[in-house]
Length: 318
Image (cartoon, rainbow, N blue to C red; front, side):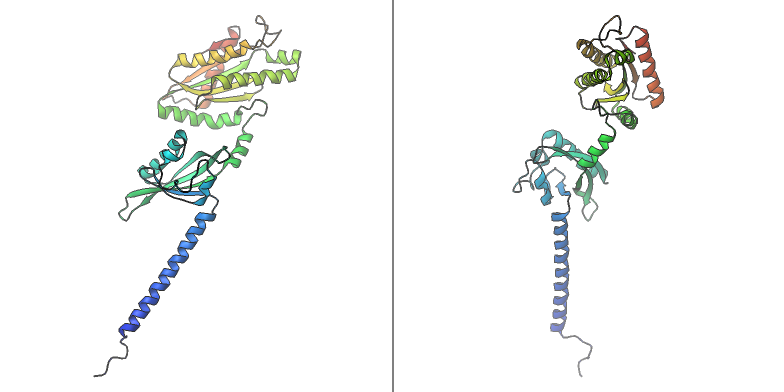
C-alpha cells in the first residue's frame, strides 16, 4: 500500500518546528530590544524592588542621582542607597502598593549629583506571580521639579516668600484631613501688625515692606517643624497652620512670634504705648473630629484676633 500523500516526513516536521521556534526567538529578541531601548532612552527613572526593599532592576537614568554606583545599585537595599529620610518615603510608597495591591501615585524627593533636591511624580504598582501574589513592586518616576517650581511661584508672595491666600485655601482642607487622620489638634493662627496703616503713613512703604519681611522671618524662625505652614493673606495679615499636642503648646508658639517681633524694637511712634512695631495674634483650635468648615474656623480665628486688638494689642488671644 502506498503512503498517504498528505503525510509529512518527520524531517519536514522538525524543519518547520525549527523555523517556528527561530521566528518566535527572533520576535522575542526584537521585543527585548524594544524593552531595553525604552529603559535606556525614556527620560524617566524605572526600577523594581523585591518585598524586602532590595533593588532588582534600574534603568541607566539612575546615574543622575547623588551617590549612584552602577556596580552596586542593583542588589542593594533602598536604605543602603539613600539617606534615611528619603529611603523611608520611597519604601513607604512601595509597601503601600504591595500591601494594597494597587497603583500608588505620590510625589517623592531625591538628590541629584549636583546636590540639588528634585521632586518626582512616581507611580508604584505591584508585580504579581502566576498565582496572583505580589512578588515585587515597580516604580516609574518623572522629574516635575521645574513644573512644581512654576506652580509654587504662582502661590508664593513675592515680598515675603510666604505662601499666599490662594495656597492657604488649597491647603486648609488638606491639613484638616491630615490632623483628623493623625488625631491631632490643628491650630489656625492669625497675625496682624498693630497700626500698620499709621506706620506706612509715617515711615513710608519701603520701611513698611521691611516690617512685613520681618514678620515673615519671625514666622519662619518659630514655625520650622515639618508640617508647619505660614502664609501672607494680604496686606499686613498673616496666617499659620500647624498641629500641636495641646492648647498651651500652640499659645507658646504664638508668644514666640510676638516676642521675636517685639525684640526687633522697630520704631513706631503711632503705636502707643509701646513705641515700636508689635503684633496682635488670634488662635483658633480645631479638634481632630471637628465638623466645622474653613469659613467657620477662620471666623473663630478672626474673633480671637479682634479680642487681642481690644485688649490693647501686642497680645496673643484665644
